[in-house]
Structure formats: structure tokens, C-alpha cells
Amino acid sequence: MKKLKSDKAGTIVLIEEKLESLGIKLPNPPTPAGSYVPVVRTGNLLFISGQIPMEDGKVIFTGKVSDDNIETAQKSARMCAINILAQIKREVGNLDKVSKIVRLSGFVNSETEFTAQPKVINSASDLFFEIFGDIGKHSRIAVGVTSLPLDSMTEIDAIIEVSE
Image 1 (cartoon, rainbow, N blue to C red):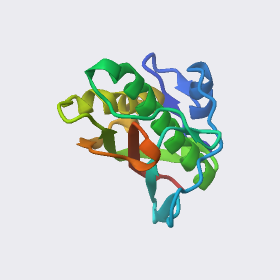
Image 2: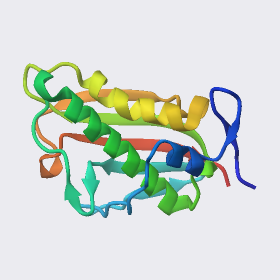
Image 3: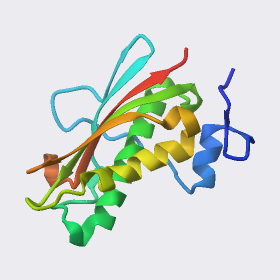
Image 4: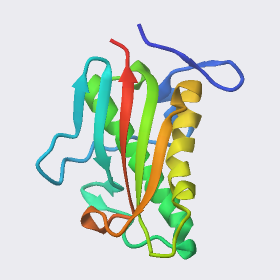
């Protein structure tokens, strides 16, 4: 049986329908760029490896983040969140099985003086809140780093709880 969620108005919505209403089409989940697996499942927890803003095998947001390009970096973080969703769907077959977004760890390829990493990663957090409602509320870190794989602007990993 599909787990149903309610939107802000209390209407029951399936997650796939919610994505469609937001204009989000999940891509094929990116393949690992190294010696690891994209998802590890233990019990009802999924540990999603770091996702970068890849689309069709290419990194679409690259370079250092500064106050001058924060909106682009927010788009990058959002794309990371969409790739997390694609990994979840590949692993469990249906996003309605998500019972809790537990934790996000966000990394921002930052210029030395840039300190607004939380503002960048908020776009990923906000997307999960919008899609999943209360079960999208999670713990999180947002840190600046000197570089990321393939010169990506952002990388986000996640811990997700799923139902059977």
C-alpha cells in the first residue's frame, strides 16, 4: 500500500504527483565517480552517497561559490537533492516509501571569505520540506570546503528512513 502524504491544505498527495506538480522530472541516478556504491541500505535506513549536480553524466554547476553566484549555487544544491531522490527511487522503487528525511550533509565549494553555506544548502532542505512536508524536516550540516569532486559547486549526502 502506498504511503500517502498531505500537503499544506491537508489534501492527500502521492510523492510522484507532487514532483510532477513542481515540474521536477527525476533523472537517471548518477553513477559513482569512484570506488563506492551510491546507496547502502541497513534495516530501514538508506545512506545515500554524496550527490553532485550531475545531469546526463555531466556536472552542470561548477566552480567556487561566493556572494556573487549564490543563486547558482542554490540551483546546484537543489540538483543534488533531486539526484538524492533519484537514488532513493532506484533503491526502493517508490518515493512514497520514504518515511523520514533524517539528515543531510551539505558541502559547498567555497571561496575563502564565503560564509553563507547554510543559505546555499537551504535550497535542498526547502525542496525536501516542500515535497515531503513534516517527514522532510531533518537535521543537517552545511560546511565550506576548498574543493569538491569534478569541481562541483555542491555535494550533498543523506540518511533516509524508508518503510517496507
